[in-house]
Figure 1 (cartoon, rainbow, N blue to C red):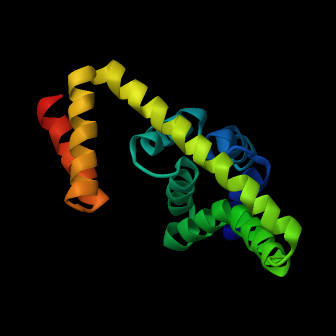
Figure 2 (spheres, rainbow, N blue to C red):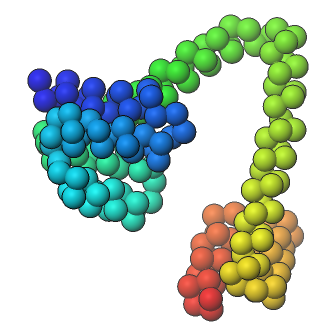
Length: 175
């Protein structure tokens, strides 16, 4: 019975929490604190703070922790699966539908319209990152990191993962 309750406690917020993990946190709180009473409000806030301190999606970290606390390893697996199941089901369904109509001229036209939109969104995100970096570290540090990254990846063909690690190291040492 506890596994079914864990599944429902995280599946329902996954369905209703449009906007990802942060949007589903109040829904998870309602299920975990008020409905099933597994945690107090104070304990939930501590789990939320711990989840925010770790990298990765907040909803899955909270589900894993609460599931493990209530029902061990299997409880953690059930809770994490319930968190990702709504997105997984929808994605499989939509991919199946898209695959069915992949040769349709309307679908091809739609994907041609989506590509520039994604490029613009990525460009805007890069500009916001640049502005944030400029405001946080100054013009010379930002310019150095941009030029060094460009040269490393384009001229000397260094893998981007190494460039990211190098930039993190630079930031840790000099910023």
